[in-house]
Length: 162
Image (cartoon, rainbow, N blue to C red):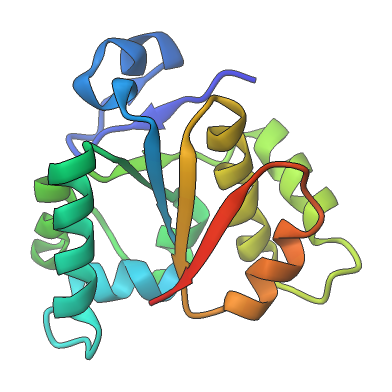
């Protein structure tokens, strides 16, 4: 499956384009869930400073690819055009659009697991990145739900509490 992402400038990039970017060489990837995304963009969020320290260290030291599924942005109510969202651009956070194939995979992951379908999109995104050779960490406040979904995949994904 080809991964299509949207950069912070709003441009769409295919896997080929991303492969030429410096971040494509990154073997580390970070996926942000709802609260992690909110903590990244809201300076008043109680977890903002700690998460930003972690993300900055990860992106600088390990040149990590940081992504957020677009379904998470919708759930969190974060628009790229909001002034508070400038942190996403500074960190090079890329959107991962919800395509039909990704939606189908997220539904399959979520069915019968008693979790939100948005959580399914987060794990589906992490799984896709892991299959492309990235070491993936998901930052979330829903550790238990994401651990349950991770157990339904065969790919190694690390889940960390925000």
